[in-house]
Amino acid sequence: MSALLPSLIAIAALDSLNPSAIALQVYLLGTTKPVPRSIAFVIGIFFAYWTSGLLAVLGLDRLIQTVIANSGFSLSTSLFYIIQFLTGIILLIVGVTLRIPTQAEPVKAPQKLNLAKTFLLGMSVTILELPTALPYFAAIEQIVRANLDLLSTMSILALRG
Image (cartoon, rainbow, N blue to C red; front, side):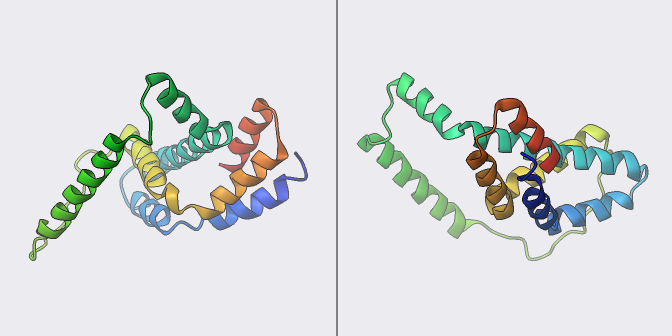
């Protein structure tokens, strides 16, 4: 595990250069009570990364396949393809007909930004940007290859978070 830490620290440093998280952190530092809000935001980011990393290492794919197999639903049925096709058509129609207002109203600062909302903001930003977190996936790949036990995996994800 100690041989794994230097590369994970380097990957974490690269992954921490997230423009969205940095911009939101700068915004939070300009609000009243900036320190508690910033801490809640960072904890939200940490929790989302740690949870998603644990699910990836432990095999979310395996869990989904088990649930699908036990439900009797097959991903290869024609009904599944029809549902996908109809969903695609609906999304295309929405995309073409969606109207974006030409006159943008000025954005107002939220009236109440408590710690729970700031925590959820950190989690939301991280979860929404997870598909683009290539350095994080590289770290997950190294953790999986190390074949660590559960406690070591949870610990290394906490250090990496």
